[in-house]
Amino acid sequence: MTITSTGQSLLAEEANSGSYGQPEWTQHRRFGTTRVYIQKDPWEVGLEQWWRNRAYNDRSPQQRFMSELEIGLPGRFQLDLYHNFIHEDGDTHWDETAVELRHALADWGKIWGNPTLYLEYAFVNNDFGGDVLESKILLGDDFGKGWHWGLNFIFETEMSQERAKEVSIAGGLSKTIIDEVLSAGVEFQWKHETVAGERSSAEVQFEIGPSIQTRIGKSAHLDLVALAGCTDDGPRLESFVIFGWDFGGKSHGGYRPTSVSQ
Image (cartoon, rainbow, N blue to C red; front, side, top):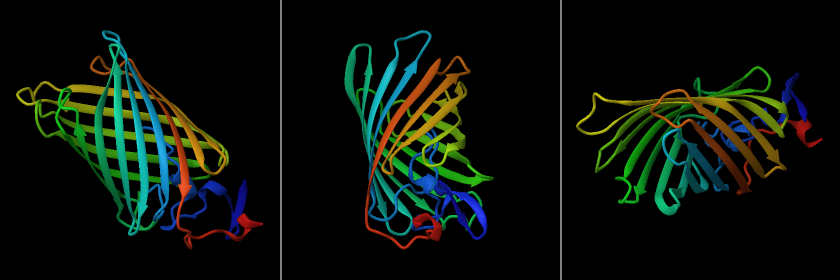
C-alpha cells in the first residue's frame, strides 16, 4: 500500500510509525546476518525461531536451531533472550543460552546511520567452548523508495578455553517489491578469527548471497538467506530460515500519516 505524507508518495512500511520515529520495516527483522536499530517498541514482545545450516566440503553439515524472545524496553532499549541447539554428526546437543541488550543512541533520523549499541553474553556448553562476550555497532537506514540497508561492526571474544577472538563485518541491502509483503536483496559476512597462541594464524571467511523476506499479515515474517562461502576457512554454503511472530504491546503515540487510516 502506498501512502501520502507531506505531499510525498511513501511506502507504508517506510512510515515513521514506531515510538522512536523508526519506520515500520525495522520492526520486522529484515536481514538474517545484520541487525538494524530497535525492533520492538516499549513492552512489545516478539518470538523468532531460526534454523541455520552450514554445509562444508570436508565435513558433515552443522544445523543450529535458535529460539529468541524479544522484549522492547523504555528509553530505546531492547532485551533479547536466546536458547540454541546444535545438530551435527548425528548428535543434537544444547549449544548456548544468551542474553542481549541493545540501545539506540537517538530517535530515528537524528544521527546518520541511526547508531545502536549491542552487547551480548552467551553461556556456552563447556564441552564445546567457553562463554562468549560479543559487542556490536549497528547502523542502518533507508534511501530512495523501498531501499533499506544495514551494516554491523562486531567484536567477539571467548572468555576461556581457546580464547578465540573474532572481528567481523556484516551487511545487507534490500529492495521492496510489494509494500509490506515482499522484499529481496543481498547480504554478506566477513570474519577474522584467531585463538590464543596462534594470533598470527587467522582464519578468514567471506560469504555473500541473496536474501528474501515475505510478510504474513501484520504479525509474522519469514526470512530466507543463502550465503556462498568464498574462502577455504568457512562453510561452502550457509543458509538461514527465520520465522518471527510479533505480539504487540502497550500502545504508543508514534507518528501515523492520516491517509493510512483512510
